[in-house]
Image (tube, rainbow, N blue to C red; front, side):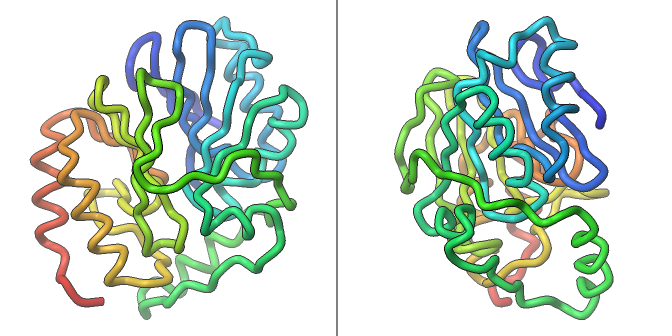
Length: 233
């Protein structure tokens, strides 16, 4: 796992072989946006300590959606450090293991990528302490706004920190090679609409579930990429 500074003293990316998570700091209080795959709790804790921070100050883990590469380590981390697990109401039953993970509607070129993505272990059933809806504000980052961004999954969310100009997009948007619509969506039309909605927030920093964060010309790049996506699936 690689640890990459995005904003000094505030934001780091934790990059796994597949996917990534983000660590946000409010002083000594910590928030994880996603948690990596099952078995990655120890590297996450090591990364936190390497920054001179205390894993016991992990207050919450916000899950952008229910997929295994984002949820997998959440249960172990939350159980060990008492963090609150947060997810959208529509994905929470999947995170808890009450419903199956929804199958995406795959385009032909996505088929081999999807098989590769399944190489990480399935996520164990994970408790959800707080189910959120669009527009709710979470107590970190000077007010973290939940943005419902369905399409990748029904309960996919972005997290917007307007006072810091930071947007966590989950897998709705990807930054692999270029900024683009994320892959493996259950509803392509919804995903494109969510892409446009997130882009219109005009952040200065965009943190993707896959791909390097965007830190320069971010708002214009997101808007241009969203506009280039067709309106139909």
